Every structure is written in structure tokens, then in C-alpha cells.
Length: 116
Image (tube, rainbow, N blue to C red; front, side):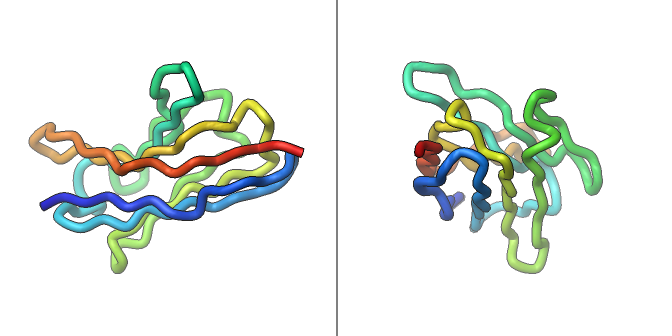
């Protein structure tokens, strides 16, 4: 059974930083595509950044200077480091995985609120 469990969300002031974690079971972040999407209230679920290979990523261009992705293969976890956060970054952030065979999986999401 596949499980993706996000953690690390919360309330942060504009300009602050936050690190999200996604712990996985039943899949292998060392293969397939894994990373992060986000969905603001009333909006669609949009790409943030995803590993597409051992060293390659695909990401939202407007976020690339502030958001970075990393992973720990030994723990089977991926991380999203967010810096210089803005009010418009407020959203539910979802961990995502697509297997080499094309199956997609989502975590339950973690709320990130950027507000003063």
C-alpha cells in the first residue's frame, strides 16, 4: 500500500522560510518522479517542483529562485525548502509520486499559510 505523508506546514511570516518533508512507503523515490504540487483556495493544483530523474527536475519557473527540492534515498523522503515566502505562496502543498509504469499517488496535503 502506498502512503505519502507530508509534514512541516504551518504559519510563517512573509519573508520567512519553511521546510516540508514527505515520507513515503510502498514506493521508491529513487525511481519514477517525485516532488511537490500546491493548491491555493479556489485554485487548481499546480506544479511546484518534481524530480524527473537522478539529478533532473521540472519546476514552476516563477518559483525556482526561492524553492528547492532534495531527497534522502536512505530514508525514502523528499523535501521542499521554501525561502523568502510570500502571501501568495499560501496553499495546501501536496507530495506527489509517479511510478515508472505511470501510476500516480498523492499525499493528503499540508497547509502552508504566509501571513503577518
